[in-house]
Length: 134
Image (tube, rainbow, N blue to C red; front, side, top):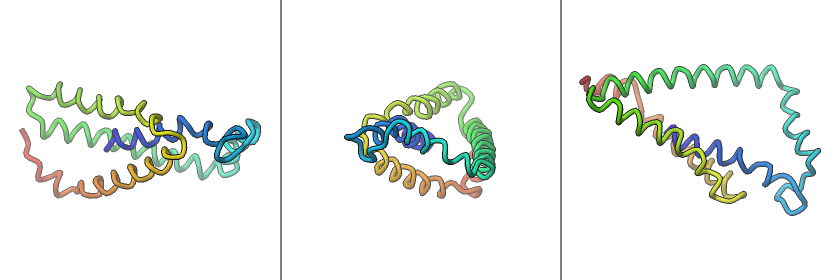
């Protein structure tokens, strides 16, 4: 799920300027207008800052829980391999997102994020508690 979210976020972020700026782009913005587009959220900066704080806290908790769960369910002899595979998927998928083209990135990555959320919702406390300790 981490890999899918990372593909979705970096793919759309990496190509947003290409989608938005230039006479042949979908939005047809000038560089100056695009700059204003990126700056306008400052008007709601307190709300944006609060959202970033909540998201950052959530990411920190997710990382602790994910690592703890992996260590709980993985035999000691496999911890290095499992952690390496996790990192490969989590970080290695980030550059793949930009390969989908400008318009498709936003549609595809929104769908990827929503599908991932469905999978994440299936991860319950009961299932985590039921995971066998090794």
